[in-house]
Length: 441
Image (cartoon, rainbow, N blue to C red; front, side):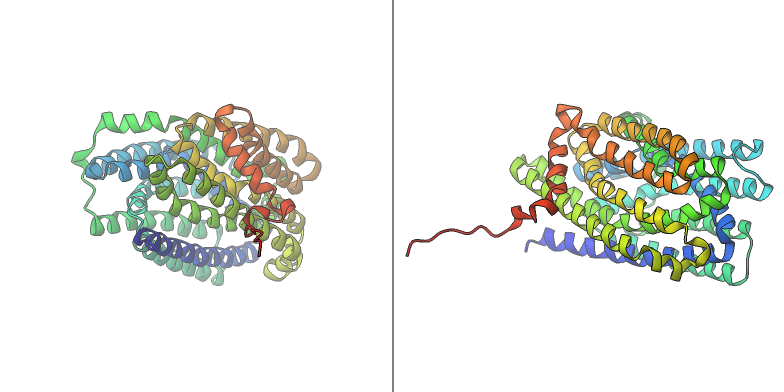
């Protein structure tokens, strides 16, 4: 086993460990909040978080994978890359914050003073999300341990605070305040660990022209990021406005239990992306294609096992964890969880589009998914409520994360890779069977 593979495996173990603990903490907190606030209160909280999530791409500016690539390929200019990316992301975050404040002040989409004040608080905290860009230096170094330690400390502390708030029967605004404080502290945490392990952010190295160049490269990713969040979170926003807050709470429980598994895909792809870039750079194209197929297969198998397991245990799990008043979430969860088949593989596709310089297709596919999801929600929510929103989610991911890549010859390679993964259950994984040779004795 080579030193790089050992380092990559250690990196993966740190990321997976973090996500398992994070998943457990978030599930425990969601359980406590859902029981304490009830469907309506939990729906209000979920709605506010969904609204802020819709502007979160402005704080990322589509630069995530691009920064990793730049730091891998041009490590000597680290300070310029970090300073330029951070300042541009701060500008984007401020834009999103101002938009949310405008919604809150004018009462658009918020029905009470508590919701308005909570939205403003969450939007201000979202500015600190811009500093998450510093994580990508650690990713480029395949050094997840430092980030994991910091992030886990923040997660555990604030999960404890949320549980204490529940025990004290705190109101919605208090809980929203804790969520906002968590985002702020996490951003500060990234500044601290980057300053300790690398160097303080050298604002003097900010290069407007270079940053603008990065922004031009990420133009498609910004728009696709917005589109991706729309078809991930717009269902809750539309449910609030078309059915009511309680429906959002019922749906949010199912969505949380479904989306909490997505960390598997992120952990695998984030860790292996630098290795894929290295194979591409060395022009080892056969090895590159083989690795893509193996990762796609692995992601699909993970998603399939999770979907089957969750479908089988959904009813007793929701009844035991959340109680009788959330039983309407069962069928929603059993539908929603199957979107994971395409979401898991999409995590790899997003990186592939970057390595192949096909960022425009990220926007096309996500944009298509967003449009289809909105239209499907408009049709299905009035008929089936939250169940309709879940069907719309699965259908939009099927189209955006698989069918869309058959449209252009440039993306059919990845569509074929995904198709081979989707066929694994029907072929019983025949491609991975040991090859037998007939020997003449």
